[in-house]
Length: 348
Image (tube, rainbow, N blue to C red; front, side, top):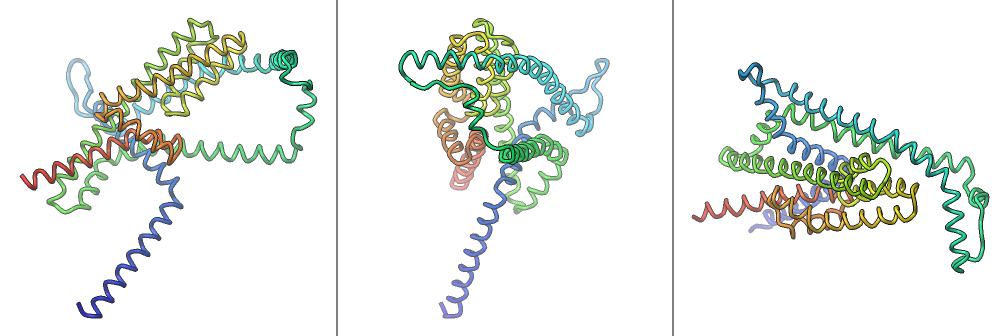
């Protein structure tokens, strides 16, 4: 190797390293956008089987008509989803507002009772009043600044939710052209293999979404029955909240249990403790039995892989990582399996 060639290799290696570092830095800066796009892509892939089913199933008077346009099928699915959300809001918000108002009205009495019990048992020696609490509240200006910060955070999160909900619409609408564009990025001899991988990923992610819906039905039904037997007010609403919370791994069930505990507290502290115990047991069974088994049967990923993926995802990205853990593990499994099959066919 001549000195000139050696210098060219060094310069090329340095340039590649610089470009790699720059790309990694840019990726870090736009990580939130990339995660949003990834979630939207997973939803689009997971919903594609349902969209194709709506496109194919069109019966009028016993005669099958031509396929309806994809945009009509998408609008039908989104209309069903929005109607479901409207029903949930109509069922959940009014009773929760009324019960929470009653709870806040009863909070001073609960606090006085708890304080008296602590004083009688010698756990605390100084009593306090509600005026003592308000004396330590921040100044109005500080409180207003904090309020604006909270509102800004809520609006930002709402914008991300809207993006995640509506971006799959456009991805599914242009799925055909996107699929063809992606195939053309590879050599002609590699395109059948890439197409096979894309179809396998679609099946896996669709199965994951179906398994997630099954978990929502199981947890929602079990919570409704349990809360009803325990005598918790508005148990059907709380069961619906539990089903919705199941869509968010790790954090969702905890957030869904909070309204149930608060509503039970308006009846008695003992009932609130019973609801807390039931929610803990349900989440334990769900995390260690239901999620691994259902996802294994639906997605084909082993329970050990699912638990490991949940731990890794939640460690890296919190509850967002927990949401993405199982479908990402399924996609990685498809890629690894395809690689082994490709090598086996090459050596066979």
